[in-house]
Image (cartoon, rainbow, N blue to C red; front, side):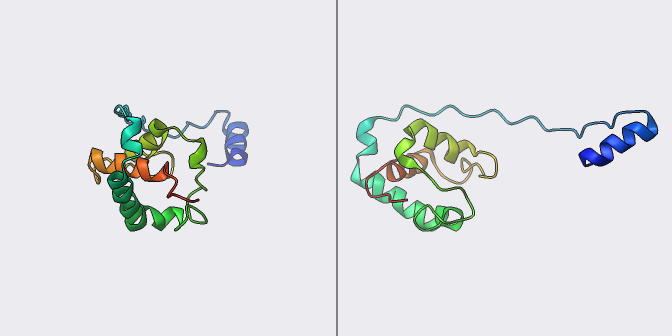
Length: 119
């Protein structure tokens, strides 16, 4: 119901419209400890790059922009932030925790935060 139709219904019917039911957001899993050495591990970065090109480019574009998803700004991100968005999802981005193993999500974090990633 639009604000205009809601206001009209309130004046005509003498009652406020009932708000749409909203589903509670599922609990978010906290990020694991992410050691700095893992973020520099070339094997992890390489694995993350493969995941990025196989899956993430569908929405984020080959170079994290332009795509259907917002432009990424990894130089401003902390590892826990990237992990949370990938694992738990956010707004229009789906959660990938049922698709990727924790090590794969960490590999993606390592790639996105690496010098090899170039948005």
